[in-house]
Amino acid sequence: MNAELRYEGVPGSELDRIRCNSYDDFGNAVVSRTSGGGEPLRCCLTLAGAGERIALVAHRPMEAGGPYAEVGPVFVHVTDCLGPDEGFPIDFRDRRAVLRPYDVAGQMLDGVVAEAGTSETELKRLFEDPAVDTVQSRNLVAGCWNFTVRRQA
Ligand SMILES: [Zn+2]
Image (cartoon, rainbow, N blue to C red; front, side, top):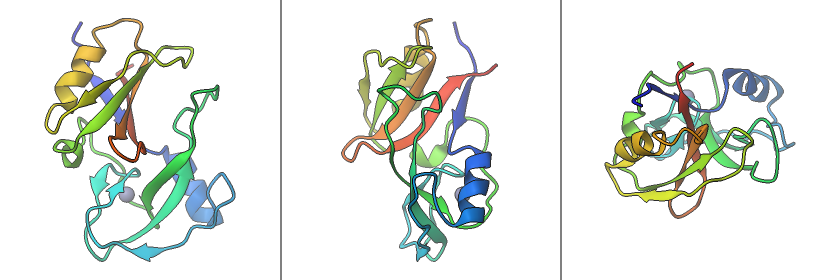
């Protein structure tokens, strides 16, 4: 099985809500700050450029809920951006990551640590298991969610 994969950041509808309300979905005010450069943005799956306006907000990447539906901090652009390009997010390629697979019921399966430059290959390998519905890429040290991966519909 060699399915095409889709890489998803924070959904556009949630970003619209956060930017419109100036609060995230968990009641935290959106506090705009100037990027020092290099913060991973989960709206467009790029690294922030120095001087860009960004904010740290709370996000729950698993919409269906359940015990594995963790809420955590993510950086986003304060104002509208173009969203992610298709394909593996290049800016995340050389970062170490934890890849956590989940089944369709949202239960976590065996995860792996992906060394720098190996996430894309590891993701393809994880999706060879038909039980895997989604995979979350997370920061190795902080555990923060980077993006969710699923098979193209
Ligand atoms: Zn963005």
